[in-house]
Amino acid sequence: MKILWQVSFRPLNKSRINNEVQNTFINNIRKYDTDITFCVTQFDDYGVKKFLKKKKIKMKYFNYPKSKLPKNVKYSNSIMLKNSLKYYLKNNYDYFIFSNADVILSKKIIKILKSVKEDNYMGFIYPNILIKNGKQESSFKPHFGIDFIAFRLSVDKAKQFLKYLNSYKQYNWGVIDNFYISIGDALNLKSENLFKKINLYKIENKFSDFKENRKWQIDSWKKNNYYFRKFLKKNNLPNLYATGSYYYLLFKVFKFKDMNLKLFLIYLRFYSFLPFHILKKIIKIFF
Image: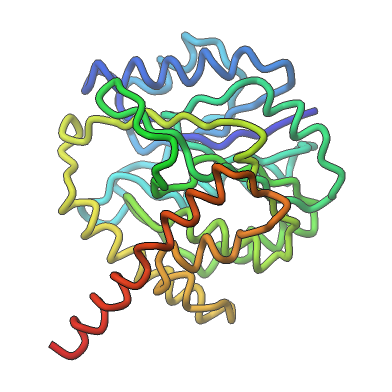
């Protein structure tokens, strides 16, 4: 089985913790018994190419000059994705995987993906198990973010995916998982939440080391949500992907076959906050 794995890395030597996290990510995937090529797009990020060469991994490396990005933008997931899909179409891969470089999952994932029978498939893991400040938080807590998605795409579906990207922009942080799930909908892919089959551990980065904070995240999310709404409208996809927050997203990916008791309780806990958020929106509109 051949996998093209899209991932990007933070600049080296800005954060000791981040260096260790990215090193752990690479070392973990090197244990997988299959043919993996990393598709890496960076934006003049210091030390990344040298780090990856030292790790002796199989990769296709792109650098997109930061000067070509809009002002105050550090990176773009839509640019990364375009590079990856174009490379996917030029080569004979069985899977295209998207993940961040701060996740850990066991080599069992290879056995799971090999067992998939569908030609056009999207497998993801939600929720992750968050490791914050070196400690694992409650695994029953419904953390936001889908940090691993595996696509099995025919040539035609991959071409359609790439075509959709012509009307999509994304910069800096936020809204990328909403986009991926909407693409699964647009391409009519067979989707599966792999949560009950395998755990995904996410190690939270120290944002302050990269001059990022909650305000930066919120501002970035608002801009990307604007681009995302334009994308949804142009492609006749439900606007609720952008306005319904994770309540709509998790509704769309809900399947009884993917459930176990733990995931059911996580869903129950997550949706218990829905009345509060509806009330909050009503107050905001009228007051």
